[in-house]
Length: 263
Image (tube, rainbow, N blue to C red; front, side):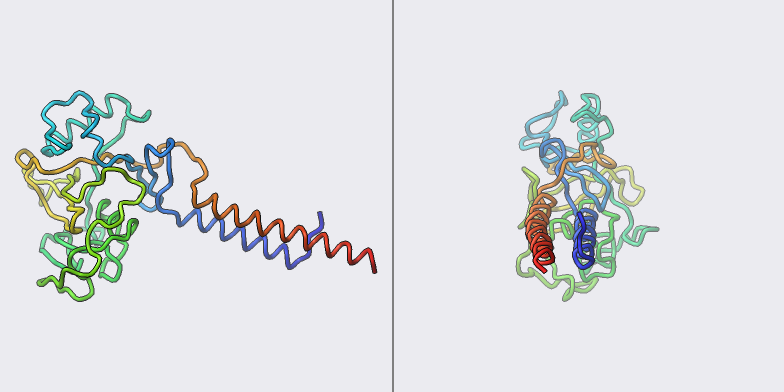
């Protein structure tokens, strides 16, 4: 079918927009919504953010509502892998890496200028969009939640808060995401007794005592895409728009051909 040049340009732009939308997507549903692939962090999140509450994989000692010590969380992850959960055996806890990509800054800050406390990777901060902390990036960027301290009005030493709209106001497609502390799999300050944690209630990153603190939850993630690649809902909506535009384009092309035959 011959298509006028201006329409070929249109289709090229539309295709480019479609591909760009795919590349910029953040969370893509996998395995009928049992997991979500994070295209920015290149990890897959378990859809149930408190799976341990309903599935302990045979691990004893997990406390009420799925809370546990870090040691117990590591045991739970190992049991999940032993069960080949969702067909894979490389689940882990989320990790925390330096915001600057090279070394941790353990000083506390309220404006996201260090790795400890608030606004790590938040928009408008020194390390906006940084992917070092997987949970902080999810909270502040992917889910677009706000921390207790305003990142633009706070300083390293003082918190300007509470800012309007702070807290876990958006849980995205995840179920049972608790406004509470979650363990990471990363040791804090090279101290075998401590591990980084993240508080989804206020957007605060800190540390807990691995073998003692029983208040924390565990969220399983795995590296890369879990494998299934269905068309995500957002892409379907964009595709529907292209179909409608395509129908109009087809009518215009047909009308142009009719007009040429008449002349």
